Length: 115
Image (cartoon, rainbow, N blue to C red; front, side, top):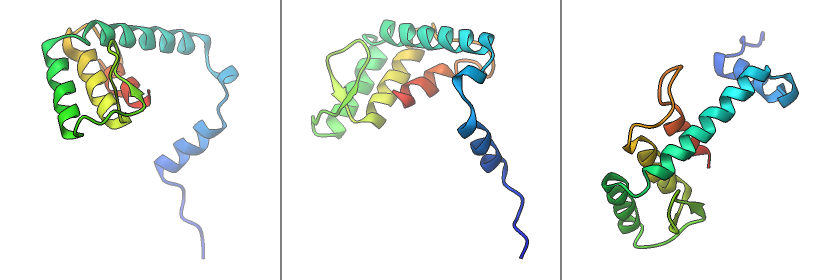
């Protein structure tokens, strides 16, 4: 029986699983660093806004006050990764300071989910 051609996701996974840092264009690396720093700064700036406070308190209440191992940016609190990503993503959007370009503001949803 003939094997089906790989799906788009399989093709992308195959490509990126073999990519090395050294293979990336210098401009791509520069922009990735810029957007990472920009998103972290926006998230820290937005960490003490009313909307971030509400999401943090709601997350903590839903967890019964349990802490986690993931950092909540700009705070001493820790949460499980999914809740920390929600709070950090909300904080990154709170002041509309987050990155631009591409699909716009993508750092605020991608970076908190990774860290």
